Amino acid sequence: MNQGIKRLVRRPRPSLRTVPVVRRVNVAPLTTSFPSGHAASAAAFASGVAVELPLAGPPLAALATAVGGSRVYVGVHYPVDVLVGAGIGAGVAQLTRRLWPVLPARADEVPPSADRRRLTPNPDGGGVVVVANPGAGSGRDDDLGERVSARLPRARIVQPDDGGQLDRVLEQAAADCEVLGVAGGDGSIAAAAEIAIGCSRPVLVLPAGTLNHLARDLRVQSADDAIDALAAGEAVGIDVATIDDRPFLNTAGFGAYAEMLATGERLKKRIGRWPGQLVAFTKTLLDAKPLDVEVDGRRRAVWMGFVGNCRHEPAGLGPSWRPRLDDGLLDVRLLLADLPRSRAKLMLAVLSGRLTSSAAYVEYSARELRVKSAHRKLRLARDGEHFDGPGSFVIRKLPKRLTVYARHQGAAAASGAQADDRRLARLAQASTRLRRTLSGTAPRSRRRRS
Image (cartoon, rainbow, N blue to C red):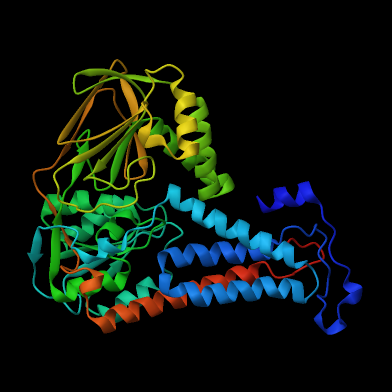
């Protein structure tokens, strides 16, 4: 957006002749002046972090203000350039909340499951084998292995060799442990859960992926939270669902949902994860073909089918959290294609934020979902990964729950000192990210963008 406005307005930079030599930048930017890209980036970062970490809001706002002020001080922007740039950045940050709503504060006040389980406290990691997935997403903590070793000196950490299969390493670890730990994203955790539930092993979830949906719903914000639960012997039982008898912990889907994942995976290697997902979403909406299926005996033409393991909030295409992980329900959401001009209606509803009131959107809860089609095979999805499945399948819950380490009380009920330490640590991480962001946009050559 910032670069688009620059090309439309094309306002010249201020003259550096009136700026004292000691305040001038070494090389004047070659792009146009309006609006300030530095101010936009700083405001977007500060606004986005403040939404997740309110305590970080004031210091980050001060840093963002200093960034904007510095652009006027060195003479490369007019004040209005900075104000408009900051407004654009803050506006974009707030706009993203409509697509990815923030986890409500009250979610930390209750445990993720009423099925609380008391296991033997394990403060040093005896009998724990942690399988670390080296291919985990961008959210991976580079210091995770060192921190796990420091806090769990008796634990053993393994990972697949080059070209090794994660499933094989998980199976070997499960056969030789009392607690199966997994450091990775949702896909890695789902693979570990499938093995752990078969051999009755509790799972230690160490979030190291890009999104870490399950860890967030477990109220496990970091590896330290999971290790605290292990040391206290606190665990919960959570639902496990299956699609075509393949377990999943978060979500499953069919139709355009699975096609979007497949397209995003292909594009990720060429243009990156997030640009790839954006292009994949747009391409899927434009190219999707209606899928004629029978859902629980009722004929439907659908664009996309989304099924969540337990009820998700909020409604729409951006579910971000689950109040409970043991409600025994499936969260079913369908985008219908059997209405006149349904594609156009859906696109307008998504862009206007009114999808949940559209007649082409259906949402309900069920304990089992039976899907039949005339196709011999369909592309299906589970926990962010796609696979070729049969044309007719069943989505249901397993009768046995998975045991996962998680504190019985939420973050709000934890001791004040521990909660303050976590907040300070997260604030320090946010400040580090801001410094890296700003240093990455610092002048490096004669051609710069601001």
